[in-house]
Image (cartoon, rainbow, N blue to C red):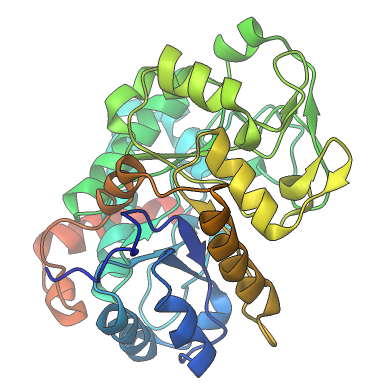
Length: 365
């Protein structure tokens, strides 16, 4: 594979942004060419059909062959691509419910979900999905809810490992989210700043257990936009204590760390002050994130994205941010492995057809 040139002052393309629609605009192309942009995240507005998505991603790769093209394709209510042949994926809760009836069949079904999910995305030129959700279902969180496999961290870990194995079979990496756990708090971090008042011992013994047990099986982690007030006054995604002291040192995680979407209310309000997108991204990177995610800002003029790119130029000149080769290596490690099957070849694959039958059986109840 031919890689685009690194930034002039060293490796590291830490910014994950979005594009406006189903085709690239001149502004999209200009932003993608910025050496600090390391990836793109797609949304439902970027989807028309498979041919259009393949063409869009082919153009992105022509501009930047090393670009990480991503999407939130979890299953259930979080599935951006649903039409033109894409398989309806079950919610993770359905897999957890299946576990209660037949653990062996549930693990096989979870592997099938991961394989179908990744195979279909890769056939359309998408490299990476932000899955699996490792949050526990405490029954209180509306934003997590049926996105969670189960209340029991053991069940969550086993099903997530099986789903990740399916992703890996199709050449796709995984991303556990939302560290150390978003399922206990009621507030939605898209619009508020949730606070979890439990102590560190309680969190590590429960919600954070999947991150410990899965160990080296996780390629990437996304922290929660939640304040765990007895551990740190900062949200986990801005906390060096959580990311460096606990995730990296105590749990030994060596993969990539993404910020959650920095356009979210909880993502940029620190000590009751609403940060700019640039300052929020810098704070996340300084706390230990390798990649900063800013979503849904290309619509209209895209001024927030231009401000972010200009802000990183200034921050690098001023010495407030420096590229990190280790972070760039972690980003590139998320790029897919092996050649993807074409859509037609995928439909003819016995492995895919068998996995799809399992997925359809689960999704249909």
